[in-house]
Image (tube, rainbow, N blue to C red; front, side):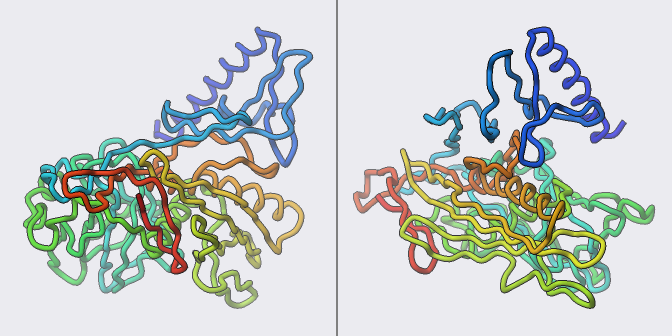
Amino acid sequence: MNKTIKTIVFFSIAQFMFISFIQAQNKTCYVWANGHWERPRANKEYHPDSLHCIKPGQSLPSRPKVTDRRDDNAEQLDNGDERVVDHRISRDMSPDLVKPAFEEMPVYRIQLRITTSDNNGTDDAVWVELNKEEHRFYLAKGIDNFQPRKTVTYDVVDADIKKLKDIQFLKFGVKGDDGPCFKKIELIINNSSTPIYATSIVTSAGTCFDNNNNQVAENLTITYNSLRSHAYWNYNGARANMWRPVKKINKEWIVSLIEACIGNQMVQDGSKLKWGSHGGTLENNTLFGAAVEVKYKNNHTLSVDLDLERDITGSNPEADIKFELDFRCNDGVINIETQNVVVSTDGVGEVQNFIRTTGFDLVSIGIGVFVAPVAATPLTIGAWFSLRRAIAFSVKLNPGAPTTSNTCNQTIVTAAGDILLKN
C-alpha cells in the first residue's frame, strides 16, 4: 500500500470515528464549501480539522477560521484567530563570539544550483528531500524548469532545517515518468559566495533518474558521507563567516523565497493552478512581466503580485493574486503578516469560483496564515514550506558595543525593496 493510499485510509477511519463521536454528543457538523456552510457529503473525504461542529441552539460563525498548527506556541488573538511566532535559532552577530562547530551552524537559507545535462531535460516536477523526515520540496520556479544545458539556482524552504547537521542527504526525484539528467549539483548555505558541496562533472550526459526507466535509478541521492567528505564542507576561504546572519534581507532573496514557496505548493496541492505563460496559438497571455513581482509600499510593507493561470482544456484563464507582506521585528524574531489578499481572474462561473478559493488557500499555505476572507476554505497547515515560518528566525544585533549583543526590534523596508534589521 503506497503512502497516498495509506493517508486516505487513515483520514477515512479518523473521519468516521470523529463524526461518530460528535454524533454521540448530539452535535451537528458542517464544512465550508463554495462560499457557504453545508453538511459533509457521504462520498467525500474530510480531514476532521476541517469540520465545524455545533450543539443544538448554537449558531455557525459567518466564516471559517484558518488555523495554523505548526507548533504549540500559538498565541490566541482577541478575534479568535491564532498568530504563530516561530522562535527558531538565535543567531548572535557579536563579532567577539566564537563561531559554532560547522555541523552546529544555524541555517537560514538553503539553495541548490543545478546544471542539467546537454541532452535530457524534463517538463515534470522535480523534488528534493534533505533528511529522513521526508519533507518533499518541489523545485518549481516561474520559468521553464530543467531544460537541457541550463544552470538555475533554486531556494529550498524547510523551516525544520535549523542547523547544518539537519541536512542528512540530498535526494532528488521526479513526479511523473519523464526524468531529467543533472550534470552538476551545488549546495549553497546562508548566501555564501561558494558552495559547501559540488558534484564533479564526469560527462556531459550527467546522472539521470526516472520512475519509468529500468536503465536508471528512480532517485538521485547524494549521501551523508559524500556531503561531509567534500573539500568545501568547512569554514575555509570565502565561507569563513557564513555562520553569521545578514543584517539585510534583500529583495532578490524575498522574491526567490516567494517563488519557491508558491511553486512548491502548487505542485503539492495538484491544484491545477500553475505559473503564468506568454501563451501561444489560441492561448491567453497570462504572464505580464516576471511571475513574481515585489514592490515597496511603505517602510514596513512590500506589495506582491503573482501571475498564475488555471490549467484547463482550451485557453487557460488568468489567475492574478496580489497581497502585502508586513515585516516586523518583535522580541528579536522577524515576523511577517500577510495582508490584503486579492484574487482576480478573467474566468467566469465555476472557473472563477475555483480560482478565487484556490488562490486564497495557496497564499494561506505557501506564504503564511492570514485572517481568511469568505472565499477561503478551512485549512490545517503543515507549514514546513511556508515563507512566514522559514524567515521567522531570531537575530541578535551588535550596534557597535564589541561585547554586547542587542536584539533587533524593528525592520525597515527600503525603497529598493530590501529589509533592514535594526535596533
